[in-house]
Length: 434
Image (cartoon, rainbow, N blue to C red; front, side):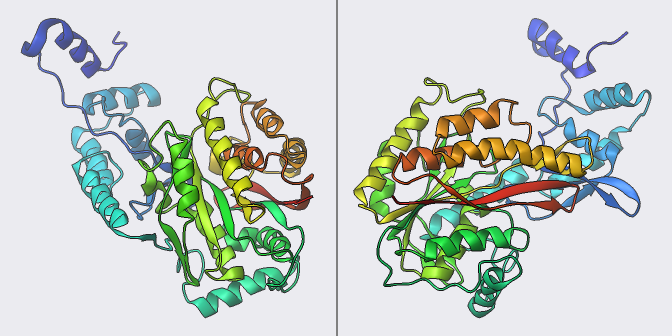
């Protein structure tokens, strides 16, 4: 009985006997994609999309084509996939032409790590590098691109049901302001109330000179933090970068913090904060945009694993102290991601919602007490089963704050349904200067 795919055996023979053994050609690998089940015309299909938005097409694949796609690891060839499908389904066979059709379809839409995608990527990279500022990627998609329409849209978030009421910043406000704000990065229609309560609190105090924004790199960046020198465009104008602060942080990195700068291009977690800030202050504040990538998979912030992370965050503390009260930290984060949309087998019911809230409450209790290590350990004590995407950005924000404010105030806690089946929870928290 065969226990390994044919080309695996060919490769082993080739390693022993050399080029006289013919080795089947491996198929290109599937890129890092976002995939989740959806109901389409009474059937369960898999929606496939690019989390980095180099490709804006979204594909619907049936179960068998998606299985073929999932086996494209850069090593398997057509024979391997035929064997694996036969093994998985208990006898289902696909012809070489049928598998090739799936591969060609994925490649034509830019979902394979192939020369075609390399060309698309290079074109996007060159265009991004050539710009002095980052375009408002989601303007006209997630929110209006017309300044007047956008102002009305955001005003309605404040004045609508559950909001804090109409808000205008007080340019003459003095005294102690917000030093750190935790707000969502979910889309405005679902998270608008939480955005509004957070930014209303910011607007009630003195206007910050600079806002250091920690966002989430949803594209799974391989480094802890990604910087950019590019300002963030919004329909209200461009928020320029505090270049002195960015250079000070870059000097603290043991990696190149600009190598993966293109992650900023389509990432929404900072863009939505830039829009909210520009709505309040126009272009009258500068920003320090920081995307958080990979820290560690451990259950707590291990000293050795977090050495580079904490050295960077020490530099963030120093930059904040040097601002002499003129800087605010914003974390654009969501909390739990639970349900079929995110890979769970269960449906959402009241019991699941209550369980998610109970665990979120545990984690947030640490955050409210400015306990960054406790926050991280609380989220990770179950291996982050709820997929708290704001784990690293909240840790970074609390470390940066470093006691520069009093205990946090929970402004809002909410959850929203995902249309593909699941819930996302999020919160608004303000840390006021003591």
